[in-house]
Image 1 (cartoon, rainbow, N blue to C red):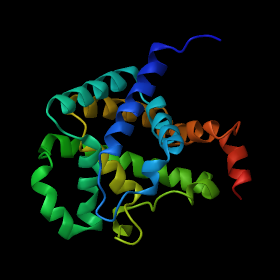
Image 2: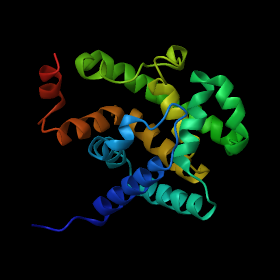
Image 3: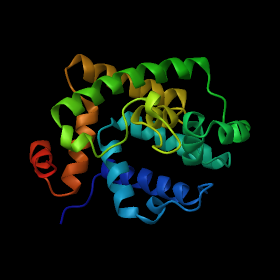
Image 4: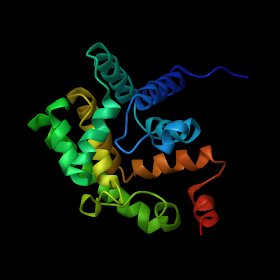
Length: 208
């Protein structure tokens, strides 16, 4: 059996670090069931990182190292940012513990969120059966009962990235869109491959 590549190892290391950080997150309603499901967690997170460039991966790995050195937990911060639209009162109580997000970062994040929503709508149109199993689409649909939308989840996660990682990812997303590519579909293809499907079309038929 051939050994894994340096890129594959980095992707696994990132997902492993995120899993350890996820275990340290304490939900107000008790431990979440997904915190006891490493198989799904690794498939989902690795599927995402597999779609990103080496430069993005390396920069984000450095983000994680810096956060560790500062005693921060980016996964906790992500869910904290997401609570602004689902649990606003709880968010106000913990916002002082969340790093401030600069105007420069917010500008990049909102452009990425806009591109993501465009791709997500394409995914819904082309693969409705697969997409219906995911989160709601927009922040307007957020609620304590339904949880955070795909838009809010992405925005919360991006807020934990450094400006360098954001700029590299934004560059990749811009180039992908200009080339007519959809990184969200690439991530979805990675996910379905982990579950044994040979294509998105096969997975879409199976979920009809």
